[in-house]
Amino acid sequence: MHEAKRVAWQILSLYLVSVGSILVVLFGIWYAKLIEDLISEYSVKLRQEHRFVILQMEKSRFEPIGKSAKKIAQISNVKFAIFDRTKVYFSNLDLPAQTTFFKLNNANIYNNNTLIYVADINLNSLLLADNQNQSALEILGDVNRLRVLIQGDDISKELGFIRFKVALAMVLSLIFVSLVGYLILKFALKPLEARIRFLNNFIKDTTHEINTPISAILMSVESLERKKNFEEIKALKRVKIAALTLSHLYSDLTFLNFSQAYEAKKDWIFLKNLIKERMEYFKIFLEQKNIDLELVLEDNGKIYANKEQFFKMFDNLVNNAIKYNIKNGHIKIALLEQKLIIADSGCGIAKENLANIFERYSRFNENQGGFGIGLSLVDKICKEHNIKIKVESELKKGTKFILIWKN
Image 1 (tube, helix red, strand yellow):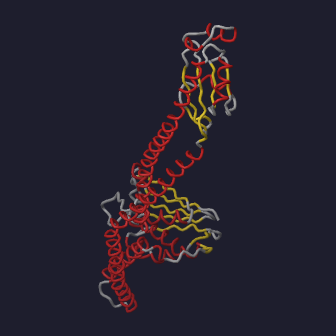
Image 2 (spheres, rainbow, N blue to C red):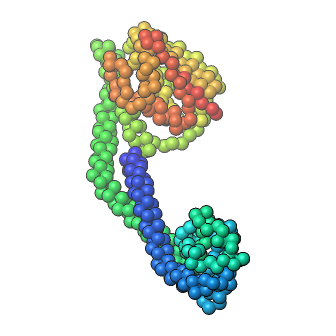
Image 3 (cartoon, rainbow, N blue to C red):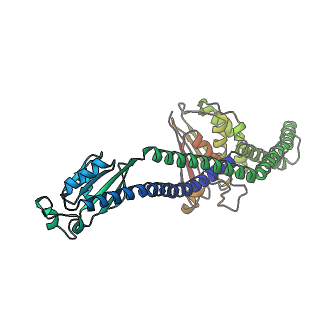
């Protein structure tokens, strides 16, 4: 269930990123259009003021440009400037840094606040050939153009309103698509969640039901062993081995599927005596294949871990060492201060398969049974306890698992 929810959130995140990116592009286009419309609206007034300045200058075309411009400024409230690429002839603008006029060639928003309008003037119709205007006449042509700049209103409030409107619309749209995406995902996953819940309950009930007859079988075998009058002692051992195998499988399945229900309390575990106790459990399996066991256990071997989980991992490694070993084989278990080594003389693992041995349901030996969950469980527990696990293996010579941790 937790895995399904994690995947669901990943799907929702991908949906939101994709839709959000599209919304950013669309709202960016809308924002640019609103700015363009705002400029167009104010440009009408600016063009009218530009036309007024041009008409007034035509009436005073026999006067110097500067003098004519001053008269226009006195009879109107128009803020304007007359300039070419090298010189400003007149300016009553409120804008700073007038030298920046030289590079303007069309309508702009100056400093993100004030709208301006720039257009050329026909020098032939306006300039009087006197000393003041002689320089302008000399530079007539394509190199320098006499131009008029009209200063418009401060539109910072209008710009702020547009930004606020676009930002608000975008936030509301994101909230809306997020809600829609969440509801779609919730309704889409509802049958899946119900199915997962049903399967979890089924597995839980099934594993519980399996455990009951296994316990009964083991109790019966132990009772028969105490009586020592069972004629088919080999058959009894086979029954016990089968029951223990089922018990081990039951334990692995419940841990993998319901690990959140297990207590995760950690404590210091002194491993020497506990490993000896666990090997008593595997004694009957070792005897079945006549496997020689070598224990090299140091007294100071310890780890800070959850006892149940650690020995779940240990049991699976030992179980694999027995299962994939040969008859009359050998197993060595070495315990150092911060290291545990489990080596066998079994069939080994091909090098190309070593990278995949910890994947759930991966199996590389069809001669032995199993579901391929043991090493997946080992890897999971190692990660939870920050244990580094290394595997060394050679076909037909055996496999060595090395566990390293820091206390």
